[in-house]
Length: 138
Image (cartoon, rainbow, N blue to C red; front, side):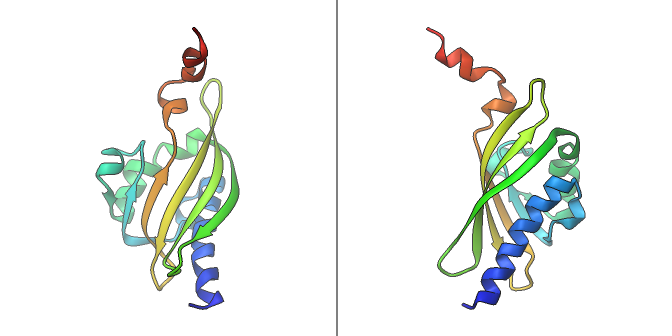
């Protein structure tokens, strides 16, 4: 595989994080039949959301109002250059705001569009604010 392919999958992953940062779904190069798995999506990671418009309606809809800063840490490529994992931190604007450490995996088609995505993160800071303090107390 060439450097051009590596650049193509890098650009797809970075466009995803740019879309989150800019709160602009249309910047994310999702394929029409994208499959998204995420801990906080309806159905969780076990039931993917299938289809670009379904992802927009069911997963994306609340995000613009919840996301603050998005910072990409690094990208990691698989050997066949079909996919990439983007490591990032994301600020979720709760009261108080929390930071999620994420590792999102993308499978990118030959056309440079994201065909599959799996988001990996610990959702407890969102679903159970203050859990760290509760766990630390005797």
